[in-house]
Image (cartoon, rainbow, N blue to C red; front, top):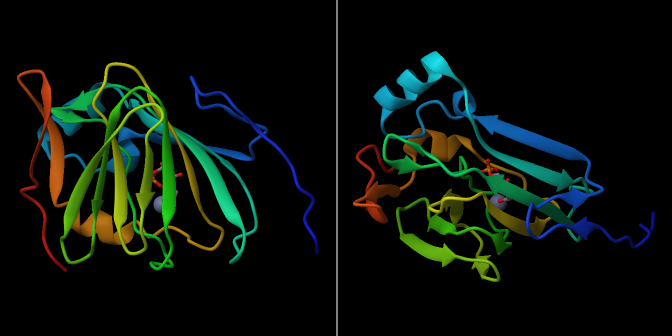
Length: 191
Ligand code: S6P
Ligand code: ZN
């Protein structure tokens, strides 16, 4: 069936995408074990369960030829000295790419292959980052305000979180003397 063209409204400051079909909220309890300082994680969870990020999606057919549209808002904050971040994922169809556009706040895109090749790209409002096929991706908020970005990716890309949950990322972003620094992830293991 032929789909009718449509338009949406994207608020560059807040990331609100209107109309959207689904908003997902990820709290610290949804990311157990993903921040390296498990002691801080536990101490925080005993008192509260903070929202780390939320993302809103326009649901489109999960088919080759279509595109998916989403905005993400990562709150400012840290667990221990590691900045709030997305879980990160590979695509279920690994030969699919993605485009990120920074809208508000600042952060870093961490990207890696399954074999452990690693790159990072600083994202500011107006930065477009191209994530080629086969690279896992995670965004990190290193600023003091919400970090908001827009994503476009193939309709049938899907998400594979399992590999990242098992291995984490090669490097993690932590605050040292008030500045973001990339350090080796002590938990990184090759498959
Ligand atoms: C989807 C795209 C984003 C993320 C969102 C949340 O391919 O990369 O919409 O889904 O930023 O991150 P994550 O890693 O929890 O899916
Ligand atoms: Zn993706």
